[in-house]
Length: 165
Image 1 (spheres, rainbow, N blue to C red):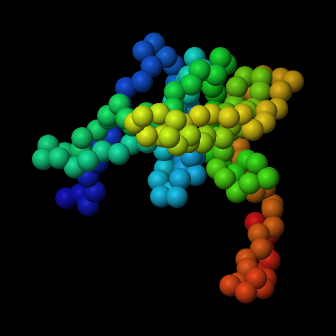
Image 2 (cartoon, one colour; image 1 turned 45 degrees about the horizontal axis):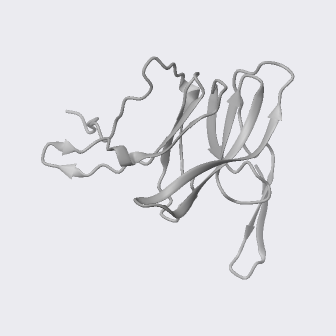
């Protein structure tokens, strides 16, 4: 007897004749929504970036799955997408950004909503925060605090602990 069961919750098929790899998928709250729900980010070697906000509903037959309104953003970046990561890549803000690795550059984008610009709700846009051109061809990257110091503050602003990660 198994304690766990795998069930389809949400799925979609994207990109006819497009190629993908394991680094081309990322999950995160990239639009920095207050509900803090994660979105699915997919990039292809053809340079197409897609962002999905899956919201399936429970039915008698299982979960409803993909609906067209689940697509938040679809954008052509003109360069192959090798890897996508979501994180705090801008020092000027605590917002989540998307870092996208292309063969010869690393670009960091912000996804934001333009409320009221379309009839059916929010319209999402991709804005370039910054990019770094690379001298050699890249194939992957890693990110993290890399020895940064974390300061834990109490309710009154007093430093509780000062640890190096």
